[in-house]
Image 1 (cartoon, rainbow, N blue to C red):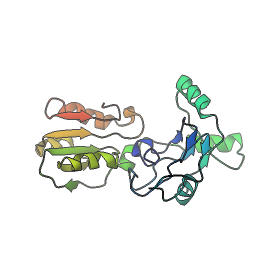
Image 2 (cartoon, one colour):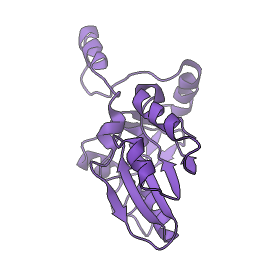
Image 3 (cartoon, rainbow, N blue to C red):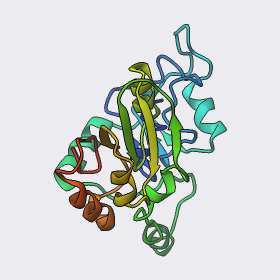
Image 4 (cartoon, one colour):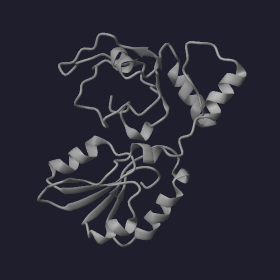
Length: 212
């Protein structure tokens, strides 16, 4: 569930190598963002009757509710080895056979270059605390990061991805965290340039999107 709602997987088909998926079921607490971010789930076997005291809904009903396609019965370990050798591919999950031209149109229309700006917060968010003053630059952060900082009583300011680096530096935070995010870092050259501008000017922690 955490992976399925992780903004870092925005627009992707997620392949699970563990053979049984959905053993613990799903709940409304462990979601890492308000929406499902990926486009489909590929697994070997799904569990329709989970066994966990926190279970509220099974994976099949959860994906159906959010209108996210999934496919099971796939040798996902073999698929993962293939992807490791040949890198990622564009793909679709469909019930209806497609012609070669239809497939080409669907695949050519896939564009994840704006993924960071689709999943980032739309305005600055402040979480009060009495500890360290921490800024989080949101390129597609997981809810668990905010929960982690809250548990340590940090004062947290969450900035949208489009925020200028000057505005963040002017606030004089104790620490800046660069969150994880979807897609290839080369697709967000402006953000990379901004990060280069703040190196050495503030304590910095990089989690993902190539910043780690």
